[in-house]
Length: 506
Ligand code: CA
Image (tube, rainbow, N blue to C red; front, side, top):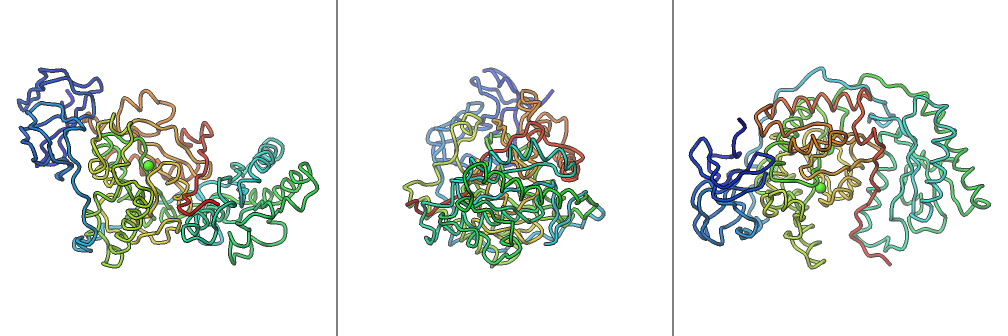
């Protein structure tokens, strides 16, 4: 018999309903709690009487204050909670509880494609980078033909991907915010999964010129690697120029072979999307366990999503490896607070209606569950918006929380992606494998051909966090090696790239 509810911390005065059909009035728990009304799955039940103005506690943390008295066994609805004030950024403990290093995990490898810059690819892809949206349909047309007419002759190349996006012109390119999309696109352009050597298609007159995008990286700018459509004689000639350049690159890429490399060459980006109240007790802690394993194996693993970290940042700054990293983390929170204020928004703009349907009352509850993905190790570094993660170990890489914006920005740094979901999202990316982890078994069953790992088994007691964490770690190595494909890859699901542009559009 699975438990009626899950209580995470001894001090919690709410529990999360486990059964997929919810519970009915009169249902009784082994401990004697009697449910007073129908409560849907993943929503909160009061475990004791909660007086008005008293804290509502989950994960041992205050997620809100009761704005009415709540009886034991009652459904603690979203509107019963008043949002607590955000943690004051100038009062944070800095590097006060740095976790001791965990014992290294030796001997874990994956079969990757070695690159000259020291990185390793998990896929061998011809990436055609664009500097501006104007050329996107032309490049997509060429990519379709390259895939159909050329790729079959190059069996060691996995795919041909047009890296198209909405940036590149009609923007204030010297405004402070422009550095973020430009840096993001540059790092995507030099991605480990296309040998760090893109083919570049430019229009000619756009603001984001190839030389600006790739700065001083000369090999990218060498003869034949950049095609300028305004130099070509019409559409057919443009497509043929792209296809000729592609053929040369495909010949080079086709000579590459997978080879066993240390797991330390993995750079894994973590994200959640469509979270529910289970995410924080099943999928995210299991991902956190796998994150600890990756750290122990010497890999980079990073979490993101500023607005989902902001309300739990007081639990993260003590874990920073030193005060300077803790201050960098706070600077990213501060930057985002100001960004939201300029737009007339605040942190209550998150969560989404789906999150609330899934039982998440507010951003504090969402944040506490979200940071479980970060495991237990020290935070070694912080990458600003658009910057590439370079440190090994656990890193915070600042991004918006929006799935497709976060994923685009994380692509600057990752060769594999782990995405947890409670409500469900068919999300995928064309450049890296996306391993999807569900927080509930009901979702994994309903979406049997989209979810790669079911962490809902943790809620029902069929598996524990450690088991699912190890399973995920091993799946990451198999997927990175090309021995397994994720469901998103199987169906060819690649979401559009949406670089975060906080700068003005002209
Ligand atoms: Ca997200």
